[in-house]
Length: 80
Ligand SMILES: [Zn+2]
Image (cartoon, rainbow, N blue to C red; front, side, top):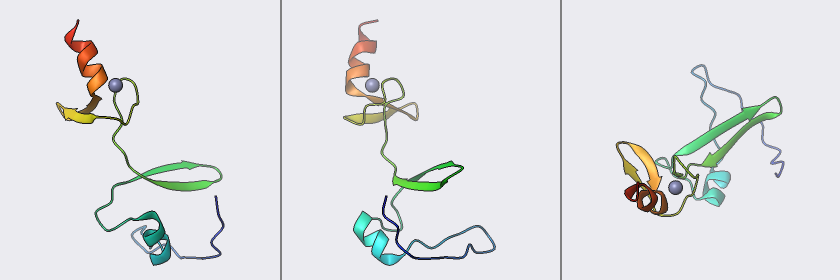
């Protein structure tokens, strides 16, 4: 992880603006879904990618009953 040397204050409602150069580098726009992780060391933001509910694969994922599931798991479930 790269230190940016940028300090931002959190707004009253908890918002923090991500610097434009970071958004450009990450190819994030205002519709990009982001996933947050945290531990005692801090907070990490990542581009959210749907992953399969059963196997965690990110390939060929589609929603079924509002749950992400990959084609491989769909094929396996059809055999049950
Ligand atoms: Zn799967």
